[in-house]
Image (cartoon, rainbow over all chains, first blue to last red; front, side, top):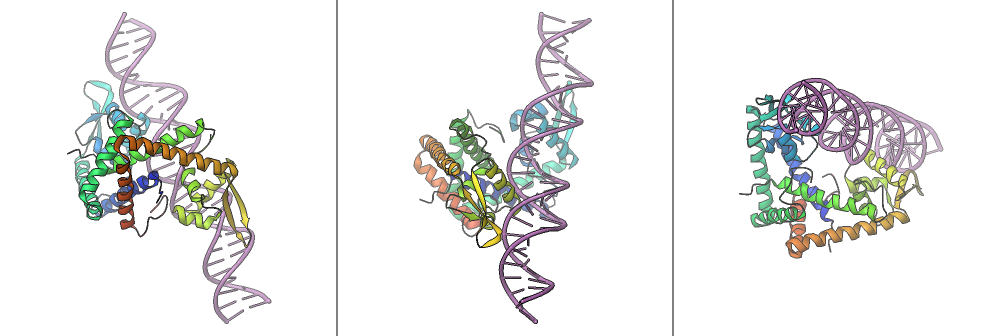
Amino acid sequence: MSHTPLARLLTLSFRLLIDGLHERLPERGFPGVRPAFGFVLLALAGGPVTMKDLVATLGITKQAVSQLVVDMVAAGYAVRDVHPADARSRTVALSDRGRELLVAVEEIYAELEAGWAAQIGADRVAAIRTDLEGVLRAAHGGVLPALRP
Amino acid sequence: MSHTPLARLLTLSFRLLIDGLHERLPERGFPGVRPAFGFVLLALAGGPVTMKDLVATLGITKQAVSQLVVDMVAAGYAVRDVHPADARSRTVALSDRGRELLVAVEEIYAELEAGWAAQIGADRVAAIRTDLEGVLRAAHGGVLPALRP
DNA sequence: TCCATTCGTCAAGGTGCTTGACGAATCGTG
DNA sequence: CACGATTCGTCAAGCACCTTGACGAATGGA
């Protein structure tokens, strides 16, 4: 009967993670990391990528991605170069500092998730992951973009 | 393993619900309903409330609440009056149209949730609800505000 | 060659929140 | 029963994050 809307639980949980992350990052020597950097960071984890690819991965407009990358470069976490084979294109990659940030982010996520597991059990956390993935895959095709459906 | 960040799954799921809701509302005769109205609507479901209470319930600044209420009144979904016993205070309530909207929102949420249940099972949906509630209660005291922790 | 397309950026706007500052009403203390 | 301190709400400005529109530069296909 708790009738708490699912949407409310989902945002609150999301915020719990994000706030926990951005509370710990400055403490560990990573100031100036804006929340929106997060998914870009993960999208760059696999190596250099073109803006075009980044746009497709993130699922937001190229203008938004462009601005995010500008800010991440300014903050020292990313590097942007002209594509060697196409002067229109740009390659975006993590800087050394960006890679350090990525490591820190993954550590913190792991810690937060461990906190959840301590509260409700690791199996439950895994179940949430599995179930939400199932819903999302069903709603789209595969698990689509990092931000926008 | 699947290593999909939990935060990503949570936002995507949230957006899936919210987008589904705001796609159906105009179709059912409720145009001009902004996403941010949602939680205010639910906060007003129990009857008239003062701005102060609304602020406490929503967990965002009084200025933000004030603006939201202005817009909801302008959209015809809420009514605001001077408090009978305290001229500084305001009471906010749903208009008739607001109550209709509330019914529609709850119907749509139920439909969307039923869709999830069809995909992953009603027990799984209930489990997600229970588990997330557990995490949130543990992190704060009770399940805190609708928006901000 | 040259026109259509692609890639990215500049500019402006909108939503949802924030902080700061304030006027009006009420309360608590002397 | 003042009167300073507090409370309630709003106005104004600003920031984060996203959008649409328009464009210059580079590429590629006929």
